[in-house]
Image (cartoon, rainbow, N blue to C red):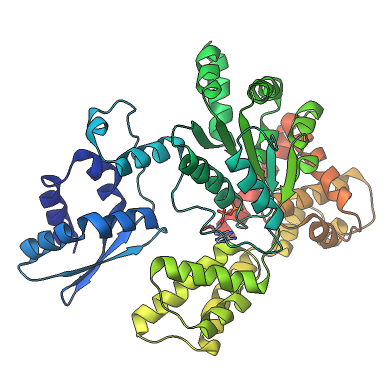
Length: 450
Ligand code: ADP
Ligand code: MG
């Protein structure tokens, strides 16, 4: 199969432009070929649409040539594959004489915007209505309405999707807008580098040119305490220049540890909105949408069973759908309710076992030479309270438990206990290497379990 594919690709190389090779053909591969049917994975629906509309005939004839037989070609979206993202040079001459689609692809790629994440593909319901409305409003009037827009919520609930939708919509409205989506790490690294290399004006110019800056997972800012002053000035500058800024975080500004007050109030100064866990109806609607996009066909009943079997996280919901779909592909049959539950349960059980907070308590107790019961006891002696705080810190940070649930695990009533514990531990590990090493050790053991 690999040989066939590489032959097909090398044939294609002489038939299409370099631009198409770099932007499109680098983002597809051959999933399988048998009985005269070739199934091609595409990185997203955007690539698939272009393949179907423009290149399917060419690919078909190329396969026929390579395989010496007629081949039917179908395209499917497979975003589980990680495709190398090509950096498209701003001045690549090829772009000057290309189609409007290529211009759009280039713009999207340079902005780090994935055309798959749009408002059109986003299911709205009670848990995300406000965040969605605010995002849509912001995308239509950059820098005017809520600035910054701060979206927070747990893992896999759609924050990145929403932020990306803002970028997609803003570009649809005006493709001349300058937009950048980046992780907080990328942004902060660049800022720090610019300071270190005395290139701050370059950094400033780059960001000043933007109409919309989207920074994801801003909670990691707490690791960058020394640079928060710089950061404040940078945000201020963007803000004063009416640049729209959008942040996402796994928690509200009030819970981000080690955040200097003026940054916190800057974050809270526009609109803060959260995304919660989806309702059952939303989960079914999301599954339907995914099926539509990927040309999967599963009956309503099956989708409902999947929705029932997955708790909350939409990323997991998608994973579950893929598993059921694979099962259907392998066995040729759609699994019934019982089978679906079995398939998904096995998985969940495995994960639950490894993510069990009791495992954290056990590891912490062992590492600090105390009993698990000490971690849950009333005692405030440092010899117990430090390990207890470490346990809360890890359960919250690594297992992503809710504050209240984290508190409950160590028999505490108040979730502020957890916030305090996290603050305390983060403060301590800055100076106390021994403690930090212990924590790193425990974390690596937990990671190995996962
Ligand atoms: P987060 O950034 O909050 O961790 P993501 O935005 O990465 O979560 O979402 C995880 C997955 O779930 C993505 O594939 C996304 O497309 C999908 N998803 C999340 N919310 C929705 C929604 N409301 N409608 C459709 N798909 C969604
Ligand atoms: Mg995200």
